[in-house]
Image (tube, rainbow, N blue to C red; front, side, top):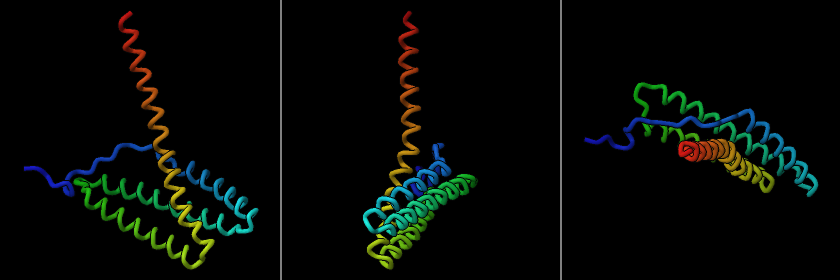
Length: 149
């Protein structure tokens, strides 16, 4: 008998997640956004973009924390992680859209900040893995060539 997908054990690979580096990058981007938006006469767009980046970082920290807690259990389940992720995503989305609506049009910067943070998160985790894979592939290719000599 097979285990249904929602009841299958949860397995997560280690990921190069560096929240301090992401915070610093978000801070630099916020300052740049405020400067650019300020020069165009709308500095609050930059401020709200920074709020969106901060919400994205808080969400990523929440993911890290919940993954650690759920995978530490004796029998971690995918269903529990899915419910956790969906509720956190709903909460962040409601906050972002509420800010965007209440402080429109400048509040729309929150939505752009959330989207930009997701790009930063993917790049900051995927690039180190990609580099490691390239180094591993290069070492493997060299090892093959040296064994023939």
